[in-house]
Amino acid sequence: MVSLLPRAPYLASLPKSASSSLRPSPPAMSSSSSAARAEAVARPRKLPVLLFDVMDTLVRDPFYHHIPAFFKMSMKELLESKHPTAWSEFEKGLIDENELAKKFFNDGRCFDLEGLKECMLIEDKLKLSKYLSWTFCSCRTGKRKPSPEFYLQAIDHLNVDPASCIFIDDRMVNIEAALSVGMVGLQFKNAEALRKDLCALGVELPPLVCEGEAQVQ
Image 1 (tube, helix red, strand yellow):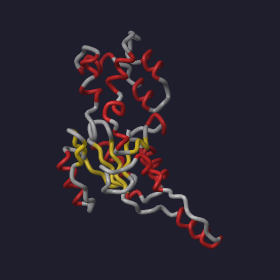
Image 2 (cartoon, rainbow, N blue to C red):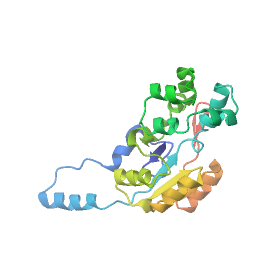
Image 3 (cartoon, one colour):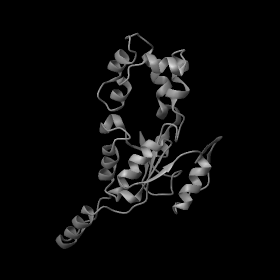
């Protein structure tokens, strides 16, 4: 999944509806100005756009950090016993959660589906949508990283130049795919390194915003 920040550097103060600001509704205009606007819309715009991977970039991926313990297995045991394609099919929206439950393990064993969902529901736990828009989710788009179509679909949706998109991910294979379609790519290693990398690209970030005892970058 990828969350989007339409206008750098306002991550901490980004409203939920910020993505709509990419395509603002124009005031009434004459036919000549309408034609000019149509021509402008046809051209990709050059807004600075930050595209964040979520798992192991914004948050720890529960598949690696919580799911083995949930099933009382080692990671090796889990990888050997799970169905090789069921999870990717679920992420692409090709099967629903009930079908996932039937296919998750190669031997078709039953398990606590509600418990698994509780481990995986990042939005419910962290409320990331307060800061970022969940815009490009594989279950909605039917595309999955590192397929180039995933990135091309995002570029088309945003109507921006690929070079205006800064894609941030912890996995180099996903970054290389972003680079292949003309995006800028940054590998996430830690928050401070990312801040320096973004500053080097001219993206100035605000200081941490405190909410009670929580801090959000």
